[in-house]
Image 1 (cartoon, rainbow, N blue to C red):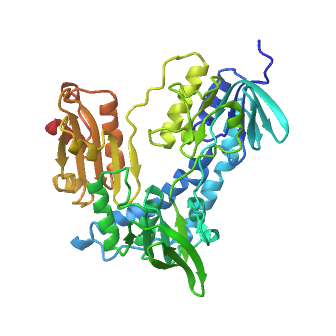
Image 2: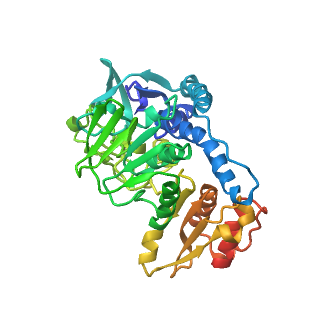
Image 3: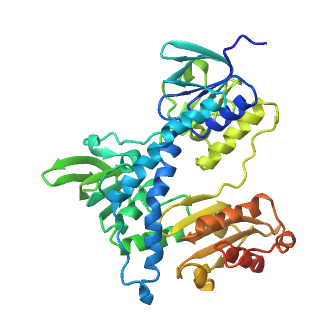
Length: 450
């Protein structure tokens, strides 16, 4: 019997840690979770939940726009952002007491403060030491902020999730997921939107052809994209803000959102003294999520990894760590195909082998499906919806899929199951689907394209 205070201490309590902490506690292990911010992290309090709540009305108005040309609607109503925020704030705020209560009800000790490693088995919080046989690091990420003149005028995603009024003129620095999702809402409200990016196109992690379609639709609504530009300063003016780039580009704005990446909160954790390697991309771990100190693990967005840093990925890692520490497995972590989705209008989704890669590599066969044209009755008149199935020529298995359309998320979730289970064409052919649901069309087409 060890003399440690706890079996496991979790430093950070986002989704990379909270599930494992609760599972271990319910299994009878003495567990502590240390959190300096809100329990269950960014996704629950400052990210996914709030974003999708705000996204909902825009999803409805986008669907209505598809019917305008038919005269079914006289006009599409505009979202009342102030009313939407009045709905969002109390809903998200209600999570705060609940999340901590869930931890405590599982038997987990909740310690509020900043945790720092003293040695391989000791974490210090506000001068008090806590010891454990195992330590799991899940410090998460934060909004980046450019170190430029006028950086005090830059806002992050947390800020924009709580603004009471949608600004008239918005500049988005970066053309990744966060910027594109917020910009999609702002341009739908008729705001002046400018997206400035260092690269030569938006959403680099997604299929270029689908991204170009979304960008074209946003431009049609008035959004301006400025590529190969580096913002170097922001100045206060009599009428707002002036965003300046090195090229000489100047854009007036009332609000500036930066989304140029999310650095990992690895600083001031005491990693260097223990020889644990970390950098802006994350904490280095092996195939068991162990750091250089074998009883110290890292999880969630804090890991330096190529797997998409998403909430479901963090939960998968959290469950894996719980199983590992309970002796249910000793195998390396094995990630399934991870579906990922950007909530623009329309959505873009992908899973498995990327579409851009598949088109360049002769080992794959790509079946393109103009889904909206085939199933117009089932896509809310969204004629531009598309799917792509990616097959491995040698095995004849589905190894990837991509989609652009309002229902792309639902399609990609179902196709992920086909990929994960390595279903053969023969196995797949024996299923019957509810009709005419959102997902039945892609599955019926997959049978034919296979």
